[in-house]
Amino acid sequence: MNGELNLLRDFAIIMGVALAVTLPLRLLRQPPVLGYLAAGQMARAWVAVNEARELWRHLIASMKLYRPEPQEAWQEALHIILEHGTLAHRILRAVGDDYSRDRLQAIYRELCDCLEEDRMFLGMR
Image 1 (spheres, rainbow, N blue to C red):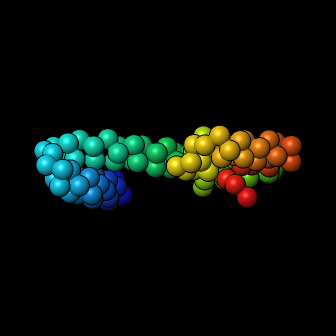
Image 2 (cartoon, rainbow, N blue to C red; image 1 turned 135 degrees about the vertical axis):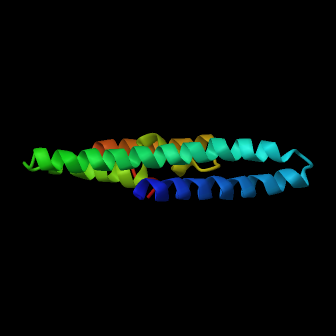
Image 3 (tube, helix red, strand yellow; image 1 turned 90 degrees about the horizontal axis):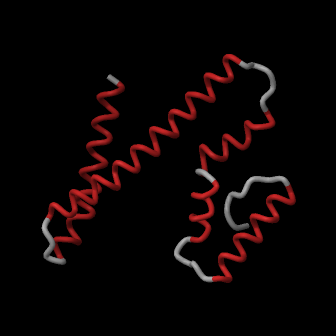
């Protein structure tokens, strides 16, 4: 039953993305198939990311069962990665649409501060 719900959810996501992409393409007098192709690519990436995140959550939960000793050393880091994405994703989110030299320097200064203070990079303060 759970697999059927996931399939239904994934189908709804693909159709929603297809609609969102196809409408602007129609205004540009482009064939709808371009929207469906783009939607398939975007939805496939979204589904893969969520499946990978769920897989990691499952592996971490299983690891806790088999190794019950204290795991505080890596628990916070894993939580941040699962909730906020990989370091590359967090950096890209911090950059946004501003690829200027000043913005990149500010982000990498913050990364250096994180290393010096032994904390995870979550974005710009």
